[in-house]
Length: 107
Image (cartoon, rainbow, N blue to C red):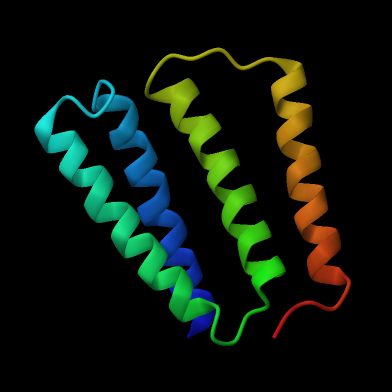
C-alpha cells in the first residue's frame, strides 16, 4: 500500500506545482488554495509511504517523477521550451533513481 501512497502523493505534488504556476506568485486565490491543499495531501501521503519505504528511495522517486512530469506539463500545458540538455538532465535524474532502487533500497 505504501507504493500506492507514494504514487498518489506524486500526483498531488504535480497538480500542486502546476497550480503554483497558475497562482501568479500566490496572488490568485483559487490556484493558491489548490497549491496548499495539494501539498498538504502530498506530504501526508508521503509520510504514510515512509512507514515502509526507505526515505532515500521514496524521496528520490518523488523528486524524479515530479521533475519529469512537471517538465512535461511545462512543455505541453504552459508552452515552455524543451531542449536536448533538459531531456538529458531528466534522463540522468531517472537513471539515478533506478540505480538507487537497484542498490537494494526497496521495501
